[in-house]
View (cartoon, each protein chain N blue to C red):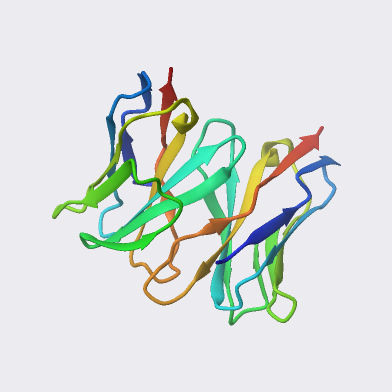
Length: 113
Length: 113
């Protein structure tokens, strides 16, 4: 157990819908990262937050957004869902954002039908 | 941006043999190189990491080497066991204010009893 929690574990929804994935970092970690893992694209970085502020953006679609709240938990919002958005979504946390160890949560498996 | 290449994509060894996985990176500013092990359907688990000021690091049966000049780093697993079977990912990260990881495509390691 890494200490990072994610809910829900599984999510099945239809195309065009919107979902919210939630992540709670390890106690004391200020940085949260979101990654998408699909069979053909591997593990891809989406977005990073540090102490409530957006720090870096990766290959995140405009239909996706995220935020980090004052209690440091983070939410990833996915809208206008497409079949191709089906993937495992992981969040990871680290103490800071400068090359420190990242610990991954158990992931949310999203299936878009 | 950073690009990480990982080889081989699959690796099959006999129990007790050694396994080596190699990665190359493109961004000379990258200075943190972790390795993750991922079992089917589970989260990536950090198994070892190395920073650019170190050439080699060892932890029991696993070791990582880094050649900054050639921009490549390798994972070495000795005395492999069936429970080492998993997908292994290398990653690279820049320093500074961002710590997001750029991952290789992964190596599926199978250890045959």
